[in-house]
Length: 330
Image (cartoon, rainbow, N blue to C red; front, top):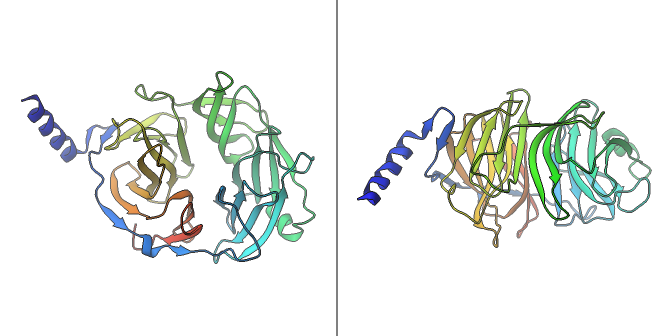
């Protein structure tokens, strides 16, 4: 009898879609569109070879790819429109103008600069995009900020010199740490923790995106099927629970991106041993599920290009780079 009642409860929950204004329970995400055949492979050509471990971001004019495996030419600039290779900069090594352990990359659009954290030197280095284009071989980066040991951003979204949003790491031992969301002042090094961990989330590991225009932060969890929509001070507006919310041992979200009218979230749903991220869940800005794009390739990274309304993706698969035109899909 209890099983029958529980079953009807799930049916009603799915029909209603949420239990309150601040919580949405989604028992199914089954509107799946296969898009593998729509993905266009990008060939970087013979001018530049990029290792498998890489990360990408967009500026107004460029696609920038950071290659973690490169020793000479770790930062590559491509034309944003047609993916034509333009220039490379950045050398690995212990020297004063070299990178030792690249961390995260963010863009200062107003000043046309790339900011890259170096976890070995505890610095954020600045690369002027126009200067890199003019003199890539002779370019020397500048120090933008210092990173503290006790509490620091593992990644960050640059807004201005006194405000970046990021995942904040606080070491608790030699091999353990707590993770939070915070505001980071690059000039002073001050960090202000915002938001709170969900009471049922243990060993929090999450990713965020921020939209100043829409006044929102979206956080997705790597180890829980949970998304939080917050205001810019970290106050939770809505929790979105997916169908895998109660399933343990899964790799869930791998990236989140705020588009003009949607939230795009790369998703795995595999156990940790498999670790294949090959889907993108699409939500509206209130967190209501819209559809799922079945990419068909294992994604290492993906970024949204608002200028051309498309996704650039880095794969750990039979192709390395590709893009998906979202026109007609969302």
